[in-house]
Length: 592
Image 1 (tube, rainbow, N blue to C red):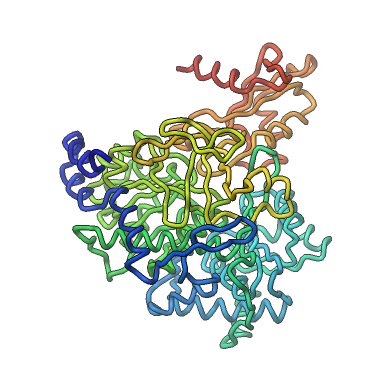
Image 2 (image 1 turned 90 degrees about the horizontal axis):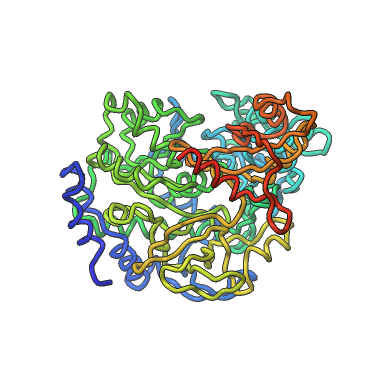
């Protein structure tokens, strides 16, 4: 490239309101230098050696030659720092050694008391807690497939996930146990309550005490065996189970470990960490890849302390950052925005923060400048990945994010590939041309569980996964997202199927037609909005009536925040489908 990103940052540095911030960011590597260093380390550092290998059914691709083969092997990396604090919630702290030991005892209990065998599906549905993490570890030690179920789901949605995945056992907290009890009893699904609202459950603690000192029995899993199922909403209107292998998850984790090592080697001034340990705040649910993979599982690669939140509260997050000297914040951009705008922010000591990272949804470009202005020693970072890629994709941060605040950055190599493809082909488009954003690499899912047709639509014969997003690559290889091809809304990091919400509202006896779409929102990114055309006899129906009706079936975050009413039939295109884009554009034009 003609001019480095760092030099472009230096040219623009005078535009920032904080010289101290400019000095700090200039110590960080730009993404072009970071990518070059990561690639060089695959030759210089034997731990990150790569090779070509056939992966599952997706053909030959670049893989890490010396990465752990299974998640239990990944957990064993913690043996290098056993006495470090790992899991923190309230006043409870587990060191890495304590968490590892407790996971082994629970695994032995699951194998003995619940007959969990390699390959068995085990559901996990609870608020964030040490017991959630230890349960996940235990399922992997048993050789089971951890089915991460959305704890915000309704009872019907939870029953759907259990049925769809074929789970034989549900590990849950008392709130979710009450929701699932009838379905589990009627369908022979065992369940174990692992936690009440503030403490481990008696049943959980009894098992731990009974099997204390007894390690898990061998499970004999290999890299391409299934490890996880996470659910994602798509344009088809039903949640799909994303089945991933041990290799898939670890390929993402090892890529981030490589990036962390490369950043440390390139920084011209290392941050001052309390007790020499990085601390990451967990403000997002563990049932998503941002929480489970990028935050929790990533800790095993760097020895970070994980300070957990079981419910988001902006002021509590400020208190936790100060109390625990949090160095890394990773949440949806909505959460960093709430920290930024909180009226009491300046009352707290946040100088330990070195990174405010976002994932799960887009961060408005103007938020990058706002973070620059508000913090002298915390750089914004954005990650773009999907459940289907195990969160690996593209990352932007440091000087590069200042120069290109609207970009999600370049692909996170060296094992992931990114191209922008033309419609219905694996042909890459030229620089600047908008097309389908596609990924190929070992972190891509095995497929949608028990949905071969959906898998075939998503992954081409050449191994390229279609993200459903539209975008383009610039001259520096940075990705810019411009639209979504799939009919989904991303509200505060949660994917919501428009079709699912439309089907629910359409069933209302007074609704004739409805179209659902997202409208921009400064805090959440998008909010769910419905345009409704009532039947002639339904003119008495109010927005509150329809919201209450939808709330009987849909999880609360899916219920439209705004119901609009049309005076005439909704416009339709040549195929007789409602012209959603025209409806949405008209509303935006009216409000601009």
